[in-house]
Image (cartoon, rainbow, N blue to C red; front, side, top):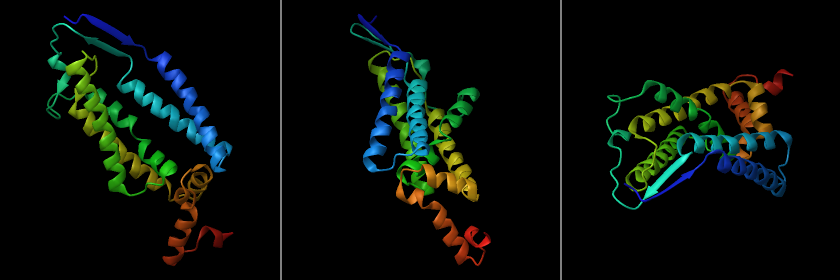
Amino acid sequence: MPTHQYDIPALPVLLPLGLALMLAVVLFLRLRGLLTPARVALGWFAGWYAVAVLGATLLPMHLAWGGDYDPDQYRFIFIPLLEMRPLDFVLNTIMTLPLAGLLFLLFGIREERRLVRIGFLVSLAIETTQLVMLFTLDGNRWADVNDLTSNTLGTWLGYLAFRRLMRFEHFRRAVGSCAFARNARNARSDQEGRNGRDGRETPAATR
């Protein structure tokens, strides 16, 4: 039995972290000359989204060390689908739906493969952390290969939904007003240019 134990609660960690990220967003946008209410709102959403993912995947955290320790084998799920928990699969898919859109708006990443790869790597980092903690510090989380699948699927589905929404002028206008990345802010003009090359009237030409 472990001789030392420590519990890290969720709220005392997540609440200050979220508030610190809110302040960091405002300072960053002000320094870059991009401070607008729309961008602040996007940055705050992204920050609290990251906080929510951290809370959903790692906190509260139980740690134990010293003495004899036998990890809970039932918390390791390495066989996909066979031991899948359907509700967890759905929730993990929903959790990463916003990821592709946020990566585009914040960093200008738009390539499908790259976005899906990032979603996979983020999920892999989470599951690896949970696995290491289970083996070394008596963690109370699950290391589940199905979470890796569902998180990656959620990122891809979010990309497809965001790409479809970008077909609409009002949505592209909203994206341009709140995006941090330069190429995301130019998404509207890029789309209009493609429409013009395709022989269709651009939105500007219809006004």
